[in-house]
Image (cartoon, rainbow, N blue to C red):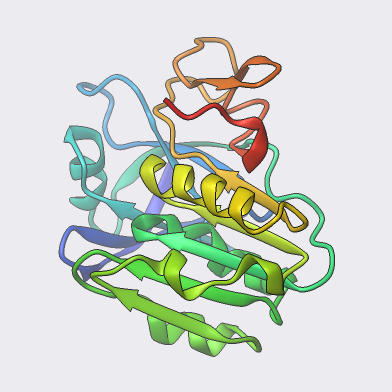
Amino acid sequence: MATVVANQEVAHGVFKLTVQGKFTGKMGQFYMLRAGDQYPLLSRPISIFDLKEDQIEFLVLVAGEGTARLSGLKPGDSLRLDGPFGNGFPPLEGKTAFVGGGIGIAPFYYALREAPEADVYLGYSRESYMVEEFQAASRGRVTVDVGGSILDRVDFRNYDTVIACGPHPMLHAVQRKQAQSGGQTKVYVSLENRMACGIGACLVCSVQCKDGRKKACADGPVFLAEEVVFA
């Protein structure tokens, strides 16, 4: 069990959860979080937002009972925290762009520690959050869109590597945009699939790819955009 030191609501239904302890993780990896020992039984996969010497931070979007319980944690409360899981982001080659939609912005803050010169694109449907923090962490350009499509603000042809994270419709649009851009840029998508175990045993997070089904938790959650078959 780990101990909560802060849980700040940064936008409506979005919380920055800070947990005390020494943790590890690479950019793009996630932990499985669970508040309490009763219902709901399954932990929730949450990307690493930031990692410090004695703390780890997550952005939690309230989307159901499990995340609602996480949002209600107070300083001093305990939670179960397992990880890190996933393959994380690939090595970043050349000029890089991070493209986040909604809570999909979360893994890119920690990624800026390794790639501070990357350009960052933050898209929100209604209300922006954590923008000042991203601007302070980045030496590249930070572009924000509220209410529109953040993909309209980024030209894949200007980059060698693009990593996108967000809801499935957005990531499907990323795949189409890559094809329309000529396919020269390496474009990756970080999938926000439901998960139960985090280690590939339960098959809840199965992803259809062109070369067969894969597991988002063990084989991903990061895949080349061109590999994924979106329904």
